Image (cartoon, rainbow, N blue to C red; front, side, top):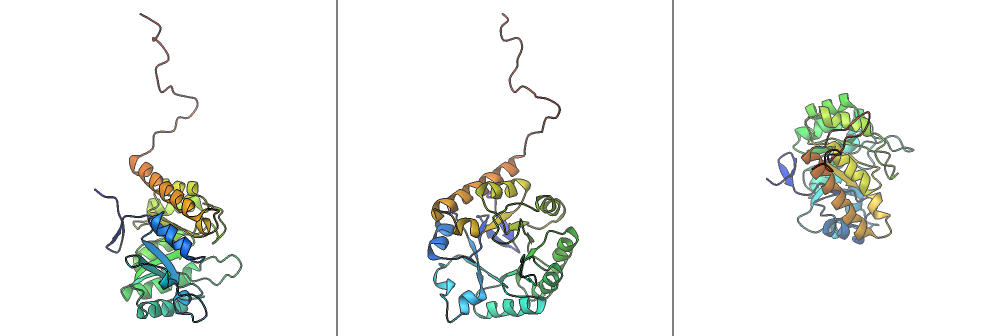
Length: 255
């Protein structure tokens, strides 16, 4: 059976999601052609602003748009942005970002939960970006979230899985896809997230700022696939207190 990522009944064969905050034609092409991305985020201001390029001109048909509520400071603003994006034809998917903190850009879990409750009832496929907190994750599930998107480390930092232990708790305890979002800086870190049991990985800065964007996009694809396959295969036991030979060490010199 084909291993698919399922979000509110929508099926995807790729487990790489492109965050397009640093978007360019090269980045989007590489994410689609080299990394196999089937979901790409967009900020509403990138699609509607008069003084900036329209990101929709760069994303081909067949790619699922994931509008985010970037710039929202509270639930009311996030809900308003989500509704506007749907009116503009961006679809029912929405990534909730409610961020009051301008220094570290950490998500406000309380406002995120409030926005999720409203938008899920309106038929949105809600994908909330959140700080990894078990109680909040449970509330988001009960509110109708399609997944949860805990940060690995602060946005754009490329620091990797600083919140690894807390993400593992969510993976173990929450019956929803856990998509690691923000801070993944290397393919090896994406692989590690998938080995933990994450359903998918979102990346942007790591690819956008790479010396060779297409090659880095391909590396992320391979790393995510390798991590997923190893997770599904099941890991061998860790041996404590010494070593255990993988081949017999005795008897091979005797007749």
